[in-house]
Image (cartoon, rainbow, N blue to C red; front, side, top):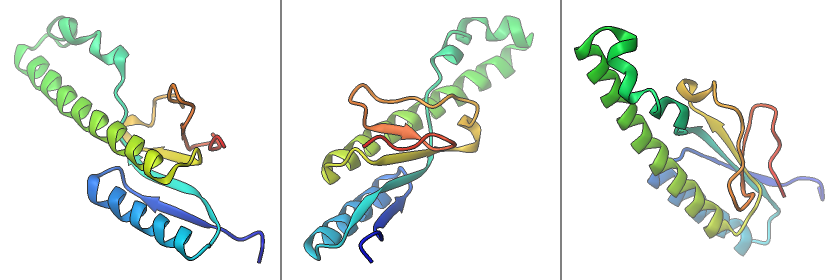
Length: 130
């Protein structure tokens, strides 16, 4: 069917990204139609939350809790940076602009964003840019 195509679905971690790139190459070699890639459970850094860092103790009224929240946020930001790098690598390897990202539950409150290259769009009502 000329309207059928393959969508590659993966997570943002290194190994699933590598497997998605490999599968994409096999699709291209076999001259099969490639429609795009969906990356599930992507973490996103929220810069607004970073601004709270200095005020956490005041807001939470608990030094220990404020410290743990700040450490947890830094861990989350590290995951978000890893995901950003991996998804950019994926888009570059596939030479595609059709990348749809779905966010992790903890980041679901963030609004959809597009990268400076216009490559990446979050799912949840937003369509991939082509």
